[in-house]
Length: 304
Image 1 (tube, rainbow, N blue to C red):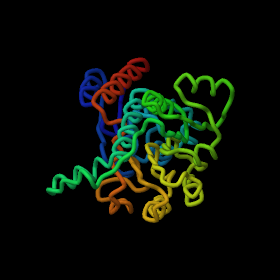
Image 2: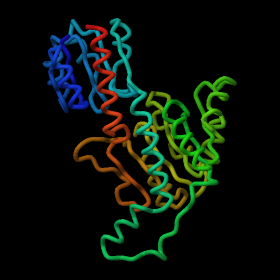
Image 3: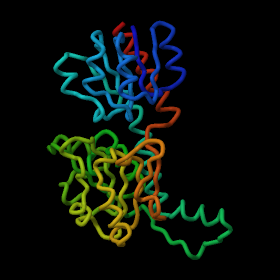
């Protein structure tokens, strides 16, 4: 099979794919470069951060398989995929646990001001009696989008003796029972926004969810709460979040995803000490990337 890999994946997986396939790499390539390299390809492997638009896919008349090495498909023209009968396969499972664990680590770091404490100590400040913090136990973890990742985060919160609530797009008795197995009580979106000591955003980016967490939504959040976004940057209005953080309505925020991502991009929240910013590393563990690579190899072998 002729494969174009448009995003970095586990190096060992690339070498194994090359053993039986014609593999071309196009990491960090722009649209024009993608158009050139995809022209004779049968399959495309990609992650976030690359625009798989109709114009790109149309340059490959033999293209029949797309493999998303992760979960979100907001960077793919799904209408084109459907109209042209292309097969698209997501690999959400391996990265979900890693994203959930990062979310929980951001909550812990925010609650105990770990980043602030580290910075002060490195500068010679022994701020033991100046830094306060909170326990996670006994607090409410509110999950906006209790799907694959959200329910895993809920499990972690439940194990930590948090009260975990979550909302989903299509609530049902069956979904409520399934979430309860993970220690997550199904609730409405309004309750999730209003009662969480920690609000975690775990939604796909769609036209419906873009800027969903805007000034109005943030105003309905519990005063003094923390916001964690591990989904997509476009879901949270960062300027409204900045206003809420500087005004004291929210206690802090942890963001792994951003409205503008990539080298040289600077978040409007960069000057705030009560904010933790990471560069979309949610699924970037060795274990998860190895498992994703193994799954890509299986998919290609099954269709070759």
